[in-house]
Amino acid sequence: MATGKMKDNRALLWPAALLLFSFVLQAGFVMEQRGTAPTKFFRSNSAFDSSRFIGDARIIENEGFLPATKKIATHPVYPLLIAAFDKAFGDDSLAFLFFQCLLNCASFALVFYIAHKLFGYATALVALAACALYGPFVLYAAVYLREGAVMLLSLSVVALFLSADKKPGYSAMAAAGAVAALLMLTRPYPLSILAIVALLAFNILQNRGKKDVIRMGTFLAGYAAITLLVPGPENIDPTGPLAHFLSGNVLDSGYGYIWLSTPIKERILAESHGSSVAGISLLLKEIAAHPYGYSLFYAKKLRMLVGDFEIPSNYNFYLFRDELSRILWIPFLSFGLAAPFSFLGIWAARHKWRDALPLYLWLAISSFGVFIFLIQDRYRISLAPFFIIFAAHGAQRLYDTVKQGQRKKAFAYMAALATAFYFCRFDYTPLAGAITAEDYVNLEMAYHLSGDDQNAKFFAKKIVLLKQGIPAH
Image (cartoon, rainbow, N blue to C red):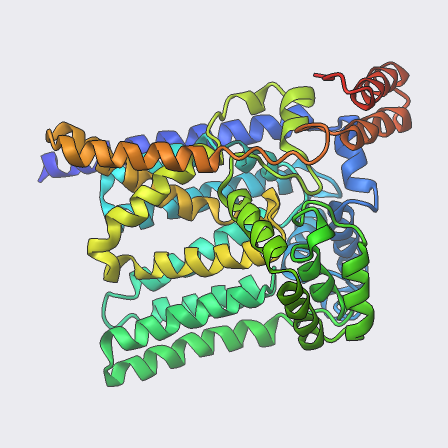
């Protein structure tokens, strides 16, 4: 008995060490960026989404949550968290950012749980190590954006559905409903609803017993309880989702890289009069009129979805890594390294597809949701843990195949990986490079506004170099 407990303790030692390493790395980056001119600039400038979340949190603090829902312009869960921490620890305290580091670590613990349940301890450990070494997780722990919360809630829904296989599973299903509601109140993508419905349908069809009606009822009760407790905002722009959708689906949009007005986008918005149904209908006519162009367009978007390049939104990972941080060089894993192994893992897991179906469903539907909207790192980051779980399984299967001397299968796996690596090493840099002149303009402004003229001039020179076609870093 004592030996068994000792083995259990040893088995938990590595996961605990990896989680501690991950937290220290994220917290170190938070401290490294604390109080710097770029940090203050990105939080306060209204051109960046962080300022919107912080602004809505201030409204909640000043007016109370229920009155604030009539005024805030974002969905309520994330600004409510910011407001709670600001109330307890003061505005712009480090407490909230350290809390985000803990949220990420909780996500990684769920990655370990899901991978362990489906594929075993070794795969779970590899997946956890990969999460600790993926750089964008570190970056987004230190900024005021909701990506970490979305990632944790997404993983929680899948983990709860997996744990509901223990009979009767009522509490797990009720918790899944509550978490699903929180997810929709954090980032309410329509495809997230579809993924949740698919998981619910799978859970019912898998057993088809009378108790499953009760299980579905407990899920809906949990969902309804949170929806009633946390009302949504009343000040969301109704045309926003359509504009967001069109930005990632018209030929002149830069594949969703650039959030700007374009002639095709503006024409569809004007003709649709803000109606999503009319807008999608007009887009389908546009696609039918230019089939070849849109075929290439969506093929490139698919490569972008699984590609190595982290397409920036508000925060450019490469700008922070190359110009503002030493810590971001430590987590070396890239998406383009994990994705090929994830393809192998998805294929290798087909023999236990019934057990892994919740994972398959969530990854497929959520990936399509990102693909059909904007493929930027902040939206893709919530997919990364699911890719990583399959990637760890793929790496484990390749290792086992080589170890067992199955040469033909190992060669086939490696040939498939080589092809996938070529596909995923797609470097989509539509402007001058990974770091653009606009990024350096932001740094120049940040340092100028803080009174640091020396650094402002330094980055101004880099803007000139980039415009002359000379690498600036």
